Picture 1 (cartoon, rainbow, N blue to C red):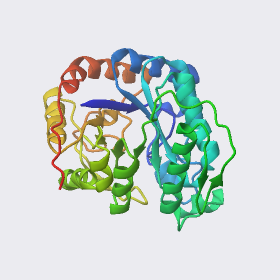
Picture 2 (picture 1 turned 120 degrees about the vertical axis):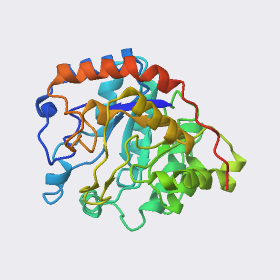
Picture 3 (picture 1 turned 90 degrees about the horizontal axis):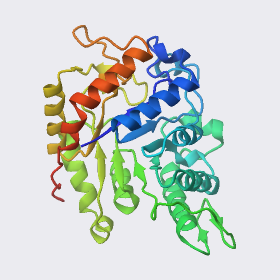
Picture 4 (picture 1 turned 180 degrees about the horizontal axis):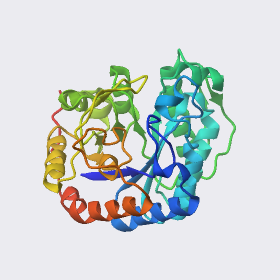
Length: 330
């Protein structure tokens, strides 16, 4: 089981509370990134929104860093850990996006794993001048075009939404191929993962449906034709937020008992998950430990770092020993 965390201060989500990291400094962000790497966490993830509209900001929070810029900052501050920026691909130019991702992978020595999202906020697409209605088709073309730029010595691609030839593209990513993770949980999204994906991260998939959905990916002809390792992410503490408004529908029960945590990891591994997050344990997760009997959120950076060290000592070694059984395609 691989473990990821988010670095405090990159976002103020959820926006319904006040957080100690509202005033975090760049020096503190670097210190957390370095400590995360030294303690043996597997990934640092960075969320993505360009802006918030005024209606969404009270629930979502106003601060959202530019995920690719922030990924460069974190990669530059570290030397071994993998950084996973979330990227809503369809409202970005695919050639510029391909160059940004290949540059980050090249400069970091191969430590980038983009998590590509199709997006769901119509107003955000309108703000960016992007095609909301065709975003699924746009995503497919963007991925194909970027793969062509990364892999071909004479890149050429002609689609409905992007077309190019007679171009030279350098630097290429260090990783060949550059691994791509995807979000989404529709059948179309899962088929896209079967065609192109090396990982699936869906923040809204019920645990009871997870194994069937992983099996669906693996059963697709494109996956069978190109079998490969597939990283899959599932919440450690299951709760529910409205997928659009993000209002809590069912509060997750967050516990800090190491045996409870490890048992939870074994349970999600049993249904096919290979990775999860400890953000709720550390006090920066999306459920924010709101239930009365949950551990209190960290009060400052010192308590946060102490929790990181506790998790690394009490949880990480046993978590890394948890193996995920190979799902049965069906």
